[in-house]
Image 1: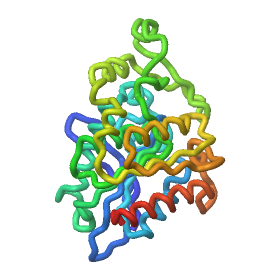
Image 2 (image 1 turned 30 degrees about the vertical axis):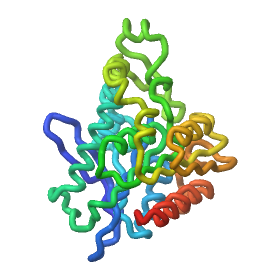
Image 3 (image 1 turned 180 degrees about the vertical axis):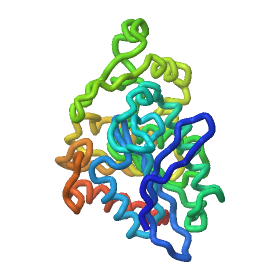
Length: 284
């Protein structure tokens, strides 16, 4: 069963749009939650095909849009709401993930009887890797952590730094989206929120707290986030498993839109390694 564009409505907060991929059976299924990265969304590229593979492996796989990623309920693809994008920040994404997890594990979730609530995996791509690492360090309900092409430090990202005086003076700065040609706005609140929550948003401290199975996958030709960041994450948690992938980029040779009906070879390997890891640690 594939359920697209479900909506979690929240009081006084923007809604969360999400997808569920699973096979209806009497057996409880491991919950796998996928978190997209910066300038990302749940329907980007070949993420649907990734979800299909996890469904075939009998997991309850969900992916969602962070509430301020620039998408809307009516149009969850790309960035029709740049005002919302401008008001995004790391703590909002952590709050989204917490609300979404609480909902999935509650009786309010219409698919509650399909989920093994004691078997919860977080997968995060790029910036989402930092978000899931912090969440896993804070929440004992998470049983497995997996990052794909993850950042190791929020403080050094282009979204966080820059000409701070000019940013503060203008109240907003812009980052060009090379694909859509949109000027993506970041309000100065992004930096203020980061500074106010700097200790919590320290990925190094979070990684060092991780006691659950932890897999780190990264391409050695990633020009967006260097594989050195994956090596750094691994050094902070020597019990983690580091899987460097040769000759592939930040999105494992995928792109948007993805018009083929099969995964690119490198992303297929990422999924294969991930599922193999989950089976080994008995999360699938």
